[in-house]
Length: 436
Image (tube, rainbow, N blue to C red; front, side):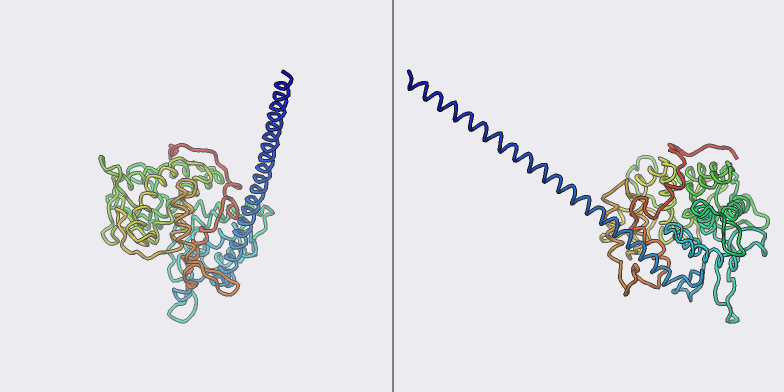
């Protein structure tokens, strides 16, 4: 009997020792796991922080490079076009100067623009003449006094941003204060280039109408100028509710333009560079330009993304998901991996050249909505990034247009992109319905 008790005691002791060992090793595993997770988290956070710092550094270098290649004393020049200047370039530089918080450059570009492109004395409005450069006498002059309304929209937006960022009221000598000028530009856009169409909708014209006009004729429009986000900011600043009607009408126009016939749910329809709008509101291809989606059209998607950034408009998101993403998938598939530079109405590539500026804008537009597509577009754009001593450029350093847009490939969240901070206009599920 005693022997059995001894054996039982030994077994119990062994079992207890085994349990203690198991508990010990379990504790060790747990502690090591916690240490591993902690180290991993710290390492990941460090990598993320470093990546963010690198992105900001690269954005700063790109901005310095942009100034080096294209800006002289406030004039933004196009090396590929005999170093001429167009109004959109001035507006792009002013927006970018806001994004970089570079007031000195902003003021230089603003001052040059007012001194050389203003139509106030010649036409009595606050729109900008489109083109400036070498004239037939060998001097420098306005070569085309007609405005391009995308430039005026961006010009007003940049000035409104500057008014919020630098609220001390100072502006360059000989110029109007930022917000005062922005209000004047916005008023000129509304009075000169926002047209009440026979179908009752407001529509943004690419340039002001002049003289009498046959109401039965088609309107020629550039959809890449359509920008509900701009309009919402202008309403916020001016109090004019016609801007919100224009925003709502613009989405209705885009719905018609990108409509898919019944029974063809998977059909791709692209945004054209130019289109004609009939008196009944229907869209038809402009015979002189054809239906080409390319060097203008891609900019619409930045403008819709802007509306989503500041208002959360679900219509902007819907168009990205249901119209842009399928187009990008088809283009990348049929163009050999990269989005084509020009496409037909159904998305079939026409010019398969890869362009960093287009890819960057598409990348920014699809970010948050289709991460896989967005990353593919980011890789496409970043393949074109090149170094030139201490400077950087995308694809071709003489190509101001591509480099005006390609920096969106590096943009992350709100860094260097202040709209969500300066303007947050609430979440909007559908186009607004305000009356004229």
